[in-house]
Image 1 (cartoon, rainbow, N blue to C red):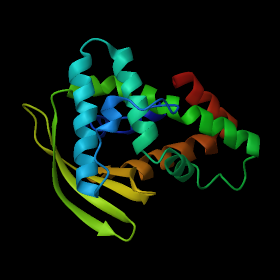
Image 2 (cartoon, rainbow, N blue to C red):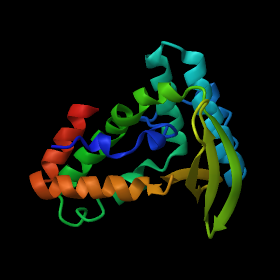
Image 3 (cartoon, one colour):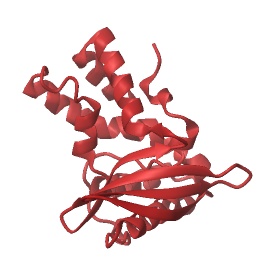
Image 4 (cartoon, rainbow, N blue to C red):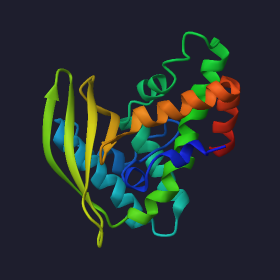
Length: 202
């Protein structure tokens, strides 16, 4: 059985800052500029990579920072609902609750550790294209000794600021890719098995 976490390429893993439950605001999280889409992505990624550079070998400290960043600046509920959109009408409230509880830790297990390979990466905002209450922020990620990677961050207006709702990296759409993997897993083994798998990897 293919590990669901292996579906995303290393390029995508290099810029996803994933986390878990909502934690108190940290200085790094507070430094994110939510005034417009471009500044939001620019300062959010600066903080994310800054955490990696400062943490060094202390991965637990970095993971705590990522949890805070994600809980505040990623549209966790919207992302989670999108991934199981096909199955939402058929699952029970208890199954839904279990899934939402397992999702954040699953994302940490999938992405956070691999981010250490990209602590020296640099992200440059190219442009932000408005799309109603959302925007597509086009960026370029550069790692020393590697070719630049194009990444598009979809951000949605939420309250007085923005939240990340999707990423497309080198033409690969994160939401579409992960949703397809979840669909395939549920078709083979059922929804409860998906939740159990997520818990085991979280």
